[in-house]
Image (cartoon, rainbow, N blue to C red; front, side, top):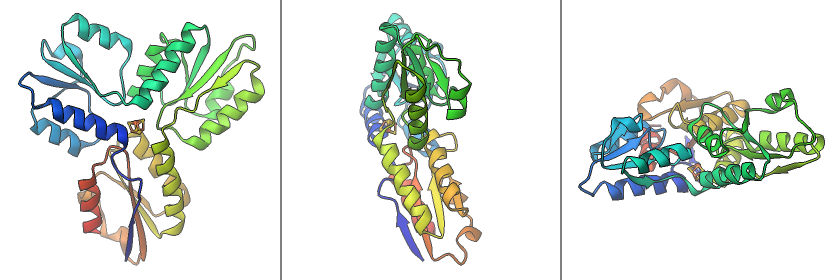
Length: 275
Ligand code: SF4
């Protein structure tokens, strides 16, 4: 059987940076807490736990020490709260997420209405919205956009959650360009997401089966799986090698493996070996 591992699989630049920053700081003697999961990957979180980094859900769970803000970023209120409480901040917000945050912040200051193409329940989107003084409108599809009552006298600015589908962003952008006289847009979708999605499209068409590896709560992994599945019905989503099923690769000649941005290389290699 021919096994192809996608070139753009696994840790992206932002996740690798966050993981390295967290590990580097774990050598300090002070207590380190991680606000939420550093990445949506159980194996990576378990690794950090071994290094003494404790995961917390709320800032109120810690009194002193350092707090890690994850690659997804947080809103301004958490920076203020951490500073007020005298905590050291280890900020691993991905620079690409930070760009979307700054756009939201700057455009709201100039009086524009920001629209975020994204999932309203996702941590990254909640953070970006907070930088817009909570004024941004969130839409997860063109259908959502079509339901909005726009005021043509207002100025609108479209940005995106970094892990959204590029094709859908383009549809939304084209629709708004035609319908709004005062409209600006910034494609803040991460190119690592774009490359990963394009590669999985090609692999799904040229292979008999596709295995996508990643956390089930990882937005970019889910999107990758949706793309693969839409082009190849024999596409499967797993978190690690233990979840592989023999029946999936029975009588299969060519199988492709791709993985979300929060999947470490060691998990990808375990899956490859097991296949
Ligand atoms: S997917 Fe892109 S935006 Fe998200 S953490 Fe990775 S590099 Fe940053």
